Length: 188
Image 1 (cartoon, rainbow, N blue to C red):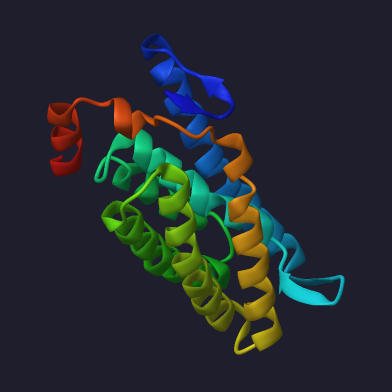
Image 2: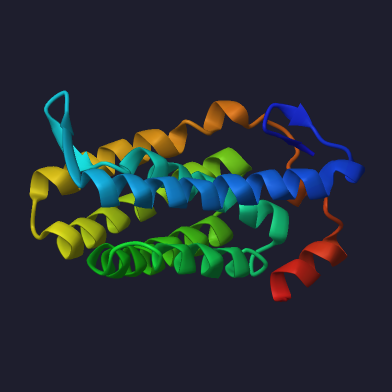
């Protein structure tokens, strides 16, 4: 399997799985902490919620978790990520939870249904899910602050693409799984 600039052997799957899950959940925690403590920020004339960069990484990280755990196997980690948002302020938790459900489900669906390699599916699903997440989150957390919606969308798309150089082209975990195992993962 080729991912994270390393070629993992079968014996390293568990370690790689834990790294991808830790990255996914960690980016959610960091993003929530930043928004909770800093709120909206303006950098180089662009306004966005402070956690946008970290949360943008979650979209690509979730796709990688899905590659490792299968189409439905990643749902447990998505639930864990949703529960993490409850540890933060109520208004932000509600906004984050609603945005999370809408954007993660759209990201999951598009990533699952689209064809092509990991990178192509990741970019396509992120281009749809990040604007949805930004729209829902900013409207519920801060109101109709359109510069923040646009700013967060741009920041999240850019940060979600930061993972691309870390992924090697070629076979992915999904490609190496036997057809029987892939069918079992996707129907679980």
